Image (cartoon, rainbow, N blue to C red; front, side, top):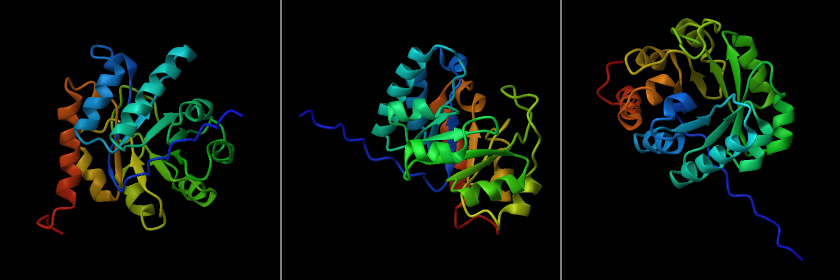
Length: 226
């Protein structure tokens, strides 16, 4: 009888940090695998594989490679929008938006330990509903001008402040976030700063990731003014 394949233990969602999201066009000069490894070396806390291309075989190869790299750094790999791909490559979870599969469907497919995040745009009540349904984190944005999603719904730091005490799961902010403007969102109560261009389009993903990591280090410093 053939031995059943044991699924690797999933990596847990960290407390806070840089949530780096891939963009193949930005990573092409040094490959997506190398770009992600550099971001991990710089201190990225979460990696999301985001690729809207139609080449399923390529997407699977890349996701499998990133799964191995993230495993080596004990950092969770989240797949954007694709529950089947997340399951196929043994990723740590999936991120779903308004037009994707439901949270319940994703949970049934990936299991109770998977990390499932939900896009909430600028809707605090959507975040509360996702939390009630079992989401592991909620994401708001965009907060600033974004070349990836220039027409995305606008959110504000005030939204985070208004809902922070009612949202018990981690909050991710996305959209035009850089090391220069990220501190404002951390102050508002965000746990993770999601970035695409500011990491993978910055020339050196490792240096860029270190700059984001420094924001979180400063926010938790005992010498920081209260």
